[in-house]
Image 1: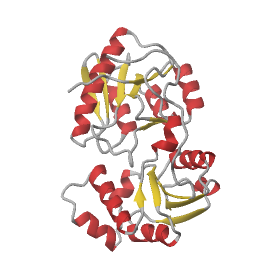
Image 2 (image 1 turned 90 degrees about the horizontal axis):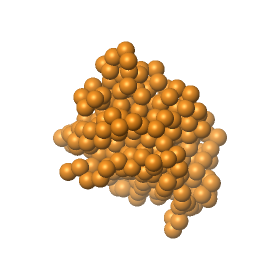
Image 3 (image 1 turned 45 degrees about the horizontal axis):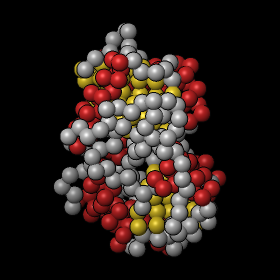
Length: 294
């Protein structure tokens, strides 16, 4: 059963309570999510924010929202951890992406090389989990950012743009099941479907390229349905499923008529402009909750 009802943003409430609001570290990747976190953390009362940022990745505007920024290259794990430890940071969050090209162009320091060497599998779960363990060795806990980001995570019933028809609802249900199964294999979290056929599955190329490929395969008449989920047992300390303005624009440019995402587990950034573009371009953006699919 799929819960799609209205544009009410169910579940988008709450502030952080019972948390130490003195100092927080931020491992900041690219795009706007690190800035959104810093803004919300400030609003909630966090007194000091220390950010580790990456050259050619992190938006330089992050400096406007935090107390201090330490700039590093991707792969400088020991320097990153030392930067936090020297500044008395005991808790940190990890937000934003690193471009795939920079992961291939990685120049790891000795600590990062040791980490990668001992991993039998290298995916988001294993790599970021290992980074969390390295942080812990120096007394720094990697925590979920979701308590601060909850206002950006719509619940079931959220919708922007046109109401789905019966065929689209069916494709959303089908795509949700496929995406959940694919995510178990650590391949990706997004699929594009149409009329019960899988057109594209996200892999290393990322969501935008998956949407473009799937939209193209839907043909000239378009009408593809994209579904993005969190994988089973998803560790929300890193890699929170996220959609934003660029995601919706890619859908519009490639004939994807519906962008569905998992309710309560997906961030929607730039809500005002996403709503405007979705309405103008006729893209349905919906949060769905599918009951147990096995």
